[in-house]
Length: 552
Image (cartoon, rainbow, N blue to C red; front, side, top):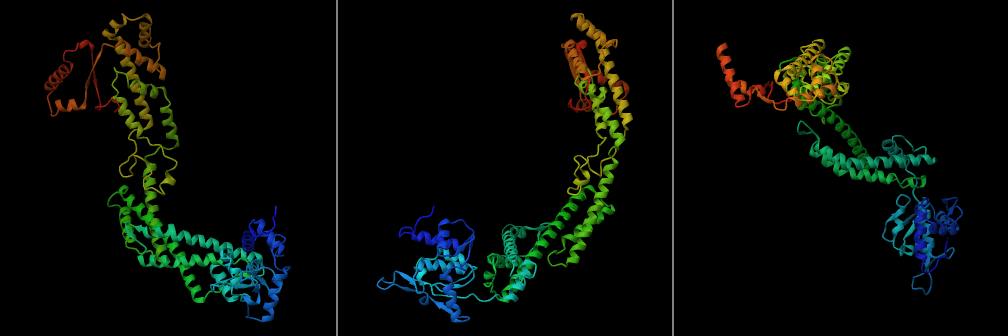
């Protein structure tokens, strides 16, 4: 809902009208109302064709002739007896503040330039300045004049150098100025990024601890990039043919800006090159620990790394940089080929992987995994078997891609020392079956021992039947459940049994030298008796440990 202009709200309406003239696309109902009243707004656009106040000024400038100006006193005068506090136009007798709205719209449209009382000139490229002028400028401005003509050679050079195409012959098309403005904003953002994050990165980029980009280059870029960004910000404001008349920059400054932009482009390219070189050198340096000393590959690695460390990628030609990068990449590929050859040699093929999975899914494997915790069984033999079995390496599908980034992406694998398993899957499966049968027999022997038989006489009938079923083969130990049941049963019938462990540390202490058979037997007897101590011999169960831990 629009309201009338009064003494109390007049200043707000004038300010809003100036703001709407400066930014016609921005929502501003009060400003639009004033412009409509002055016939400066139609069809949703700023337009001075039907504005008598604007046309009067254009006619007067035409009468003055090319290059002439229209002074303030030829436009507005102070009202008599007002102490120069009230000013009106000479032609239509409208207030000076409304005339200033007209002048602002004409500046935005590129019809005139206005010189303020402080000597600054406002044209279509910096019209936003008028939004914040003191209201005294409404009657204190100095003069107005027609904008100068378009500098076609300058437009041609600027658009060709910075926008990427010569647009000097397309200034009658609206899309041309959208192209210029959008590209200028894009370039300004790129320069801003370069000024901030990339300049910091530039100062820190190293090859093997050596800084690549010198302080002289950094100082020059810090000094010159703000001017380049300012130029792009200004170029982005030329959104019409009228505004591009204000593109008036000395050619020597354009040449300097071109030089700065080229240096930024070159530097960014070199930054990318240096990062690649640094990554390659770091990769090859790390790869050396996985290559046999004295090999041709190691010799090539040392030679390539040494050449790269003394190379100056900033001051070298593009051909020299490409040659080094290609050479390093070839050496990296040679290492990758070497690594994969060694890796695939210790890995199972598809058929072998199937056989390995069959072992892992077998009842013997599952049962032995559980029975190794049984107190009457020696887990050392299964632990040893498991160590051999884990040497059967299944290839990881991501190796071929991961090796591109990491010299050794495989945990626990070293191409120098890793060797294929010495046993085939068939041999390992047979050994597992032997362990299973042996442990099964050990369980039967334990249940048939005199001590266990004496204990069973004191237990329930169902316990005696269960033990008898194991010994005569009616109860099978062929599942996770049955294996756990056996362990619990053995714990139940051997509660009063006492374990005596003989570990590698004890054996090393007692048998540290060569001995005769009789001497060895006598020492072993003494060792066992010392370990038993006061324990009852029929209650003792001796267990040899392969390592000092049950889990080994």
